[in-house]
Amino acid sequence: MSEKIAVLGLGYVGLPVAVALAKKFDRVIGFDISEKRIEALQNGHDWTDEISDDELAKSSLTYSNTAEDLSQATFFIVTVPTPIDNENRPNLDPISMSCKLIAPHIQKGAVIVFESTVYPGVTDDICAPLLEEISGLKRGVDFKLGYSPERINPGDKVNRLENITKIISAEDAESLERVKNVYGAIIEADLHIAPSIKVAEAAKVIENTQRDLNIALMNEISLIFDQMDIRTKDVLDAAGTKWNFLPFTPGLVGGHCIGVDPYYLTTAAERLGYRPEVILAGRRINDDMGPHVARKTIKLLLNNGRSVGDAKIGVLGLTFKENVPDLRNSKTPDIVNELKSYGVTAMVHDPLANAEEAMEEYGIELHSWDALQSLDVIILAVNHSFYIEQKENVMDRLKQDAILIDVKSSIEPSELRSDIIYWSL
Image (tube, rainbow, N blue to C red; front, top):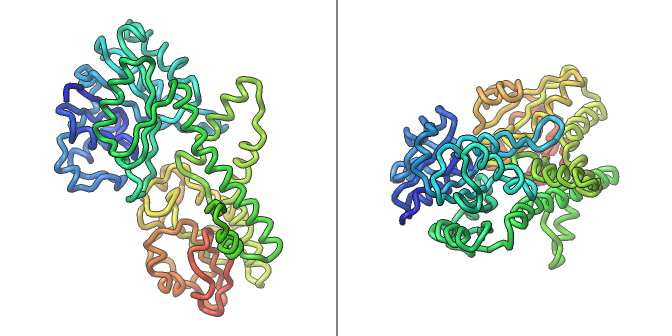
């Protein structure tokens, strides 16, 4: 096809998009500012595990971290992360930097589509003026903008890019047609045309806000049921027999979507003079679940006559969710840090996490699997298949009369040794 496409950001979102497009278009450039990332992809390996080495080897995708290569593009797709800062405010630096990278290389007639999560108005009010200022070109005349929110679910081998309905939007009919042609070439599911860029931006932030609030409800319910000495999973199994009961469960809410996106919406609302109550209440509940798990662990130790200071605790799982290597916004460090405040240094293991990144990001040393022996407590924080498929091996690492904290109720109590003290959210 005739478009020459550049995809900026080759992470969980951008790489699958770029690889898919390279199957349909003659010229697709995958751009990332990380030299290390480009080198790994050129050597045929995706450390996010979203694209197999075999698929990378077959791809015609061109990799680059040289901005001048962007001048070949007629169609840009921006998939850079949009994180939050230490005060839970949107950090738009990556998307602003992308605009600055693109602007000097925009050809007249180019279309630029953003996939990064933003609050409504960022494309029009921040990206457009920045692109105009640096390029010297006029939006709507010399170049056009669009927005198509990403819906990648890291580690999900069923719901993939091609079979998830794709929302698209653009500033006019002409640019919308080009956006349709590009995404229509790779999406087997439907394309949903949003009536405006702002509507598409808003759809993205509420998707994950809705999930965040539902999980917050389950987390609050788990706090209540714990006081009643009722296992939450047993209640949810019973309630779930009703046809319209929603299948959400309690747990740690981290990652770069559910734990981040609601703050984009609440920040935008506060700038308009509206103070969100429900959304921020849900965020407070979810953000406290890691410390809550640690406090419960200490309480169980004390209630069972154990010395907290001498307790040998193993924490299983550091990535933000099961079966992915991504450490961004993990909530396991909240457990580790809260334990540390009680004078306990936990041993952390993760079969997928990068040890160097764990130390650099969180100051957490990853221990070998063999090092976790004769433990007083195991906290199963992330239910990687590595742990679930060898439950007996996990339990064998516990002393007699030890404690198993099963955060996501991944193990049935009936499967445990009779001497193990079990607790879950």
